[in-house]
Image (tube, rainbow, N blue to C red; front, side, top):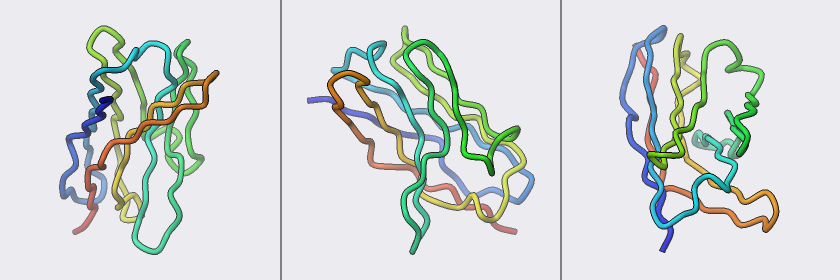
Length: 117
């Protein structure tokens, strides 16, 4: 079956950087829009960044200018570079693949990002 596996989560100080990766298997990767969501305890899941099949990107307002999403279709990988991390970036970050025509969604298990001094 389709698998999405995230990695790169860690404990980091405010102002620090992390790079998250999500590798997909058994998926026609190039046909899917790819998204990073996050969910903090007690909060709703929110869309952090997305990249379309054509490479167009979108970001949550609070991460614009700090986070960068990218995709490598040859490696079935979507990445999220996170700079200038803040306390309220702390959350579980989840990778999502969404087929824009069929509406199919696949999710990874998530990777924990903790920003703490």
